[in-house]
Length: 112
Image 1 (cartoon, rainbow, N blue to C red):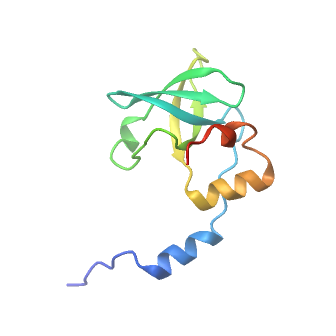
Image 2: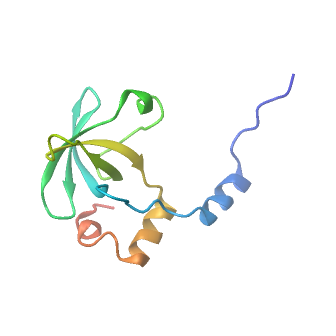
């Protein structure tokens, strides 16, 4: 039986070469303000609006979200004040977004 490899230093170094996902179509970037429980949370968009977002069932096990995370959202077709959380940006991807100027004023509010 083949032993499953653990993430090591080599995996962390290769993450720098990964390109950040850029919002396409109706998608937008937001900052997690508050966790509400039950995979729901309040997110502040770049326009300054507070939006109710949820993690879809297919991603609940894989997306662990905390307050202060920068995420990619896709709004619902019938209610633009609600959205599905589709992706959580990693620290190296956040740096790429800052270089491209896609974060706007979101990075001014970060607590870290």
